[in-house]
Amino acid sequence: MLVLFETPAGFALFKVLNEGKLQKVEDLWQDFATSDAARKVVELKAFNKFENTSEALSAATLLIDGKASKGLRKFLQKNCEGETLGVADSKLGNAIKEKLKIDCVHNNAVMELMRGLRNQLTELISGLAPQDLAPMSLGLSHSLSRYKLKFSPDKVDTMIVQAIGLLDDLDKELNTYAMRVREWYGWHFPELTKIVQDNIQYAKAVKLMGNRTSAVGLDFSEILSEEVEAELKEAALISMGTEVSDLDLINIRELADQVLALAEYRAQLYDYLKNRMNTIAPNLTALVGELVGARLIAHGGSLVNLSKQPGSTIQILGAEKALFRALKSKHSTPKYGLLYHASLIGQAAPRNKGKIARSLAAKSALAIRYDAFGDTEDTTIGFEQRSKLDARLRILEGKELGKSAGSAKGKPKIEAYDKDRKKGSGALITPAKSYNPASDLVLGNSTGPSKKEEKKEKKRKHEDAEEETEEGHDKEKREKKKKKKAEEADAPEEPVEESEKKKKKKKGEEISENDGEETVGKKEKKKKKKHSEEEEATEPEPKKEKKKKKDKKAD
Image 1: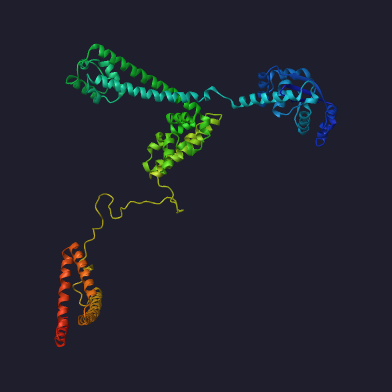
Image 2: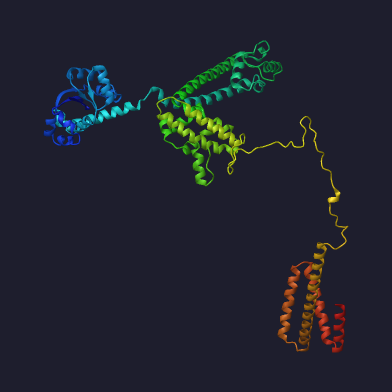
């Protein structure tokens, strides 16, 4: 029995010396504990060395796919006649058996034997040192990993980054050149600016017409519609523009040719970009369109770099300045960046744009990852997510009534109110209800007092009682004040008290001067009261009692 073993340096064939030990798989590892014990079990029969790295890479890639290289087939035909071959891969064994008619074995005993050979490889193969085997393994693994990535020229997204940048530059240049044509030719035919709005049609009309006097005899049907053509010819007859020379018209026509050439090249570039986007990122293109998808890839640097970003980052790509300004000033952050130009967000109402932008960014992140790391150009994910977003947009806009949040009965039934309407005509079956005056309540006809009137009478009685108690308190206070003043008048006046009164009078006068007419009136009333109190103090007691009685009667 022979065993095929693949190494970074080449293919090795080992002869099994004692096949009886393969029956005891559990104890087979002990036979490879040392190099001497391993030489008693297996022996190197032949070795096929790789000539260079490319040959090693091609052989390794074919082995991964379960195929035998040309060099391996020749090597096995030469050394495996009438022998059973043990292989590490069952697919490779089937391929060898079909093409070379060699019996191949793949079981647990062979796999355990492979582990033992790998452990003692440098000892069993003469001339293969460990320091040589390590760099060979590393180089082959790097080459193999590059091959596994399968960089296809169709998957290079650098062309998209350059194409979208050039497309934006062309738009700016076209706009600048078209405005220059309008401004330059406007001196000769200013009315044409309002008649023809499109820049490309304007350039074609200028190129065809030249001098405005020749517009009447020209046919503009290939460029303009009949109505615009008739309006142009009428305006050319009564135009207020200045006359220009033939040399000026030649230069204006050359500039118009430049505008038309740039427009034609822009259309070609857009078709190229559309094809590249459908090849490299078909699912992203189905979601957001060619231009928005290309701008996202250009902003991210590449499709792989963009696939590493979460949906929240994709949502605000292109609005970094607004984001950091909002964070610095503690205002609300932007809801969308480059995604704002997607058709789905354009269809949404202003209040729903943020929600749709968040959903679109999440779906776009999934589509980008599938496009970046998927092997096929399948667009099912993109169209499925697009249909889901369309349904969500219809629900948000109220175009489709969904299941209510708190009910389990499904969609609510909405019926038109046509209970009282005839089927054929617009008249009502039942007449409109007339006004019934008998149901009104007239307050004037009621015989007894109402509840409101009783409440009002109770309030009046309560207010009258409060007023009487207040008047009694005021009378007692007045009598006490009069008694005190009479006692003060009988007692001898001191000079200190007089000086204090003068100071108070001066202060009162200053206050009265600062105040308005109301304070003057109050001061006069106080003086009158003081004068009456002094007279009462000088009068005899019987007169005082008479005055008190009169005051009581007046009250």
